[in-house]
Length: 222
Image 1 (cartoon, rainbow, N blue to C red):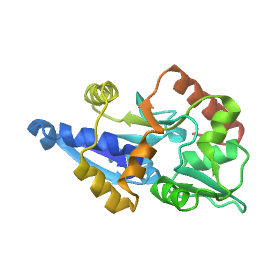
Image 2 (tube, rainbow, N blue to C red; image 1 turned 180 degrees about the horizontal axis):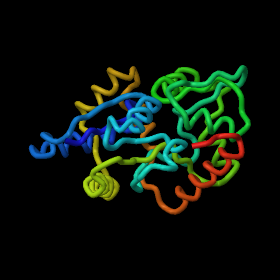
Image 3 (cartoon, rainbow, N blue to C red; image 1 turned 90 degrees about the vertical axis):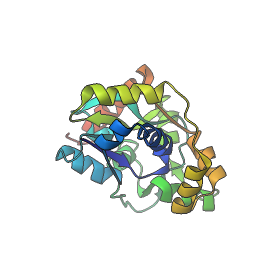
Image 4 (cartoon, one colour; image 1 turned 135 degrees about the vertical axis):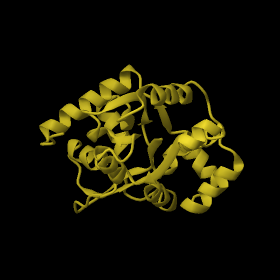
């Protein structure tokens, strides 16, 4: 039995599409138990070994066994935002809160679909895109999460490599379902997904090492 934990945001819609197609294989379908939640809860379940694999916040992944698949952005990501002002964390995320500290920025943090909805509603408001701010300072992409595993190394690594090797098209029925659930138009979903990548290569690994190093300087202890 594979207990798989996935972040319940649009940024993983391509991977969820891939898994759904993979589930068409009867033997894989029988072996998969799929759990969706916000990043902080997936992190918690993973640490407790209540899931065998999942996308784990990068700040929590330093001591995990991980693949070279993750949630990565270069430049603006539009779903990790800071509204300058009084400090107010988003309890759904560990990495975004820590990223704001590393960048020495204070304000209200919004992540995920609610952040994307906010941007689409108020594109001209005084928002700071944390991914864009990171890239402007360090000229590197930002890794928000990594696909990690507690068990089934060979199978999870195979899944990661298979997904990374192909361009996956999202069927219209899944796009429409995601649109109804998120309250975001299908064309905006596709536009948003163009700002996400999933392969973790040497530049992404360098960015992750730098983020973890800077986080430790700001008092984070894994």
